[in-house]
Length: 202
Length: 292
Image (tube, helix red, strand yellow):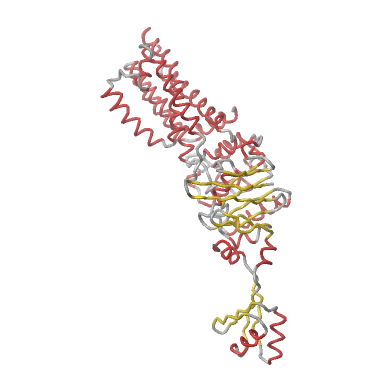
């Protein structure tokens, strides 16, 4: 497990597009954090989701998942290692980009702390979703449509759906964290089942 | 030791691999041959735990791949045309894999030298040629110093010197007691390397035997040119041979070269050519793989 996490971290550091996208999201999230803590929480959530999805889906896109399974044929530890890696990376990402938010006022500080609590759940949700769908482009298009049409226009961000729950959790509203944890658990269970599909060569 | 026992994979109603049993032994290079779509890659992927068999077993040293402790120390695999992230350098790719295999960075640098990629180690693998990606895949497979090598089309994209290098590498590995299972469509190349051959068609085993034995199964054929082809053909047929005339040349089956020469001499027909055609793997393979 440790070797898988170390290998994955090394991979993220040595693939320029990986760390560039993290830096880009970090700059965006930090900039919005200076303006409005709520927007920081939203961008951190989206960034965490994006980083997690890309980390896992890249292995299927470039078929390097086969190399992971040759090293560790038991697939659950591989999934857990990828999830742990994304949790670690996105926590640092959120903690660093939220520094301006933390020092704004007491309310913002609370939002910062609550967001840091919910970011790992978002990382699990993103990584698990990617393990199910396996294609980042499908997830991002689907996510965009879902976020705008279902959660935004239809649900007015009030239904207990993933992104709305994440934002409720970051703001400390109702059972947001609990609902979002439920979504992450469902996604993780789906990923654990989907893991055992054959790894095709195309 | 690699072994498959009644290995079967079905996709819906299609039986991609159908009750396949064969073995690849230590100290030998085993060629795994089949036409496109015959089930070679599916078999290798089942062997490596990437595809689940519908029935049967694929074993390495008596265990399924998924139950091998430290599998990268036991088995090195080359799959498809080199798996790597195109944005990662060759060296970084190997270091990522070395962490998984428990190998050090010194091993990475030695392998980069061995496969001839030391000068290109810091280039993105997306900029590599196909041959370079194959060399990187071979280096990746060798990271854990495994006994068993499973190579699927490793010669794709390699130039003649690369092929010779790969041939020597695999030969040395087998001579040192390792097990090598290799699939390739470059049959002339493969014939220079392999000791044993496994031929499959439509997911089923056609032949599994030492290559020399396979050559022995092939019908020996003579090429004969003489002063009077028509009469020569008649006397050969009179001696029980079957003769096919291709322009001035006769292809003769059923006679030894010595017998053919003596017959021609007895008839007073001068011979211009008498050649024993060595059976070659490609022809035997096509005969077997194409047979229904």
